[in-house]
View (cartoon, rainbow, N blue to C red):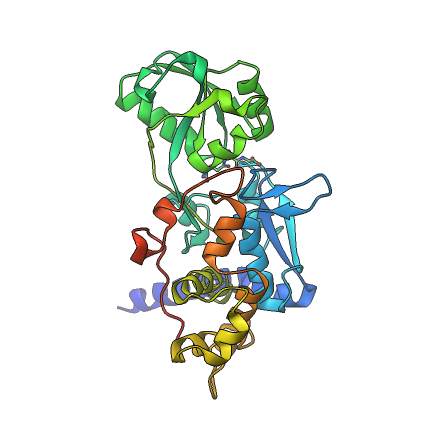
Length: 340
Ligand SMILES: N[C@@H](CCC(=O)N[C@@H](CS)C(=O)NCC(=O)O)C(=O)O
């Protein structure tokens, strides 16, 4: 009995020390005056710098949403470009406050790497890009192919699993940098390029002749993409999660960046509550923010639909349909718990 109590006490002390070591990100972010987000080195529509170093993308807007929630200013977001391999050490070491970069939520990242995931800002799955000239209609015809793939990703393992499960041979051509993988594929060093389907649509735009390439119909994995934070910092985890939920709830309520001022005074009780317009509310202060945090996210960055349409939707070069990323009541998986 004594031994059990003692080990419980030691366990609690270790846990306490671990949380103390990594807690306080919200305070740190407020003190330095900006949030540092891990981005990719360039995935159009998701996180992509232009020639002037201006970032855009659905993941970039997530980070700007966090800045809007914390500071009332989306410009207080800084981006660090990270390869697939470098993104995890950057989060572990504290170089970045949050990883907002097409990262798949898996059990090993959630446990042995020491991260926490909760929201999925883009539901995806892995696919294959091939040259039309190959005359391949299905991934099952790819036996013997040379496949370009980026290291440090879930992609590598899914690729191995899929070819093994279907008794197909392949030659992996592995790159650390996405740009090298893309140019190798473009130069004909591989027959196939594989990554998340979102990544395939994005990379295709970078090829010499995008229209000469097709995405095969097979989706071989689940890739729930969302932000990761370090374990042991519940408050920061909550802030990062609720920014996404605010965007999704806003879409569900029909609140947009254009009508949010009107909705704040004329909306129903749940809309007013979410936007901080309720007598004696603690809807934001309990999160460590101001009560108008969700208002700021919507006003300054937009609801989930606005962010999706602006970065990856049918009217952008990526031309992606909502699909799995439609709201739960429109046949998709985007579902946010209530803000109340
Ligand atoms: N979702 C997968 C793959 C993510 C990934 O890193 N994809 C590559 C290919 S699209 C990428 O983003 N490369 C850009 C870079 O390394 O900067 C994962 O989390 O492992």
